[in-house]
Amino acid sequence: MLRIESKNPNFEEGEIKSRRTSVLELGEGSEVVYIPRFLAFDESSKWLGYLDKEIPWTRPLIRVFGRSCNQPRDTCYVASGGLPELRYSGYQPHAYSWDDFPPLKEILEAVHEALPGSSFNSLLLNRYKSGSDYVSWHADDEKLYGPTPEIASVSFGCEREFLLRKKPIKTPKVSLLSAVQGGKSEEQPTSERPKKSKQDDHHSFMLKHGSMLVMRGNTQRDWVHSVPKRARADAVRINLTFRWVL
Ligand SMILES: O=C(O)CCC(=O)C(=O)O
Ligand SMILES: [Fe+2]
Image (tube, rainbow, N blue to C red; front, top):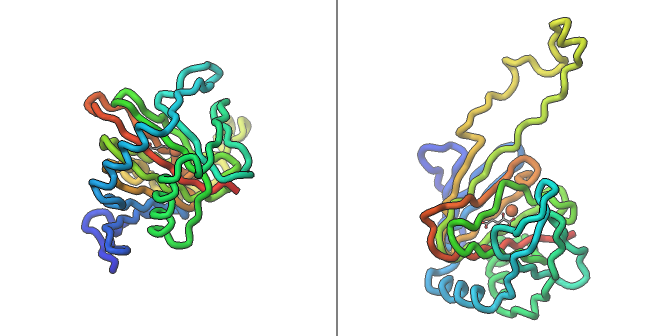
């Protein structure tokens, strides 16, 4: 059953496997799916306790704009054997095995069940200890995920805002000569360019305890996302992002 929600024509709400599911079409082949009650509340609290206590969290040194700094959240990485190593911001996390944390396989199974046809073989875990922990604007566009990665993100604990913002459109440079001559570039005339609406270029989700958000298609190519600092977020949040490494 698929119901169209009232205000935003891009936003569809439906019932998939008896869970409320929202599909946000971002255009040009980018899509976000949000399932607020992917896992039951009590079950999610059990997972939060397990992950907080049993995962060997580290807060690595990373390089940002040529400077070393501590990543502003704890992290851990789990991957199937034989995959190429993950490397981001000059940091290469140790890849733990799924067998090191058997309960994670149960969550992976629930994710696969909810997303028929999807497959994930790696997991990046993040722990935000308080509202001063965050992840800045980025796209998960590392080569090892391929050009159109599907990323399933499961959240536990403190509700935090997840923001999506469209990447700026790269405009080809107008040559100096044609600018001096007052000539127009050979690109589309201004009136024919798609109108930029700030509203369509920004989206926000309050990620609930036990929720799942899925990014698909061209989302990593065309959009960036972040979880900003929030002074009033005073409890721990753990986020699991399941990915497929080629
Ligand atoms: O914590 C989140 O919801 C997002 C994490 C994220 O974007 C990432 O690990 O790449
Ligand atoms: Fe990300």
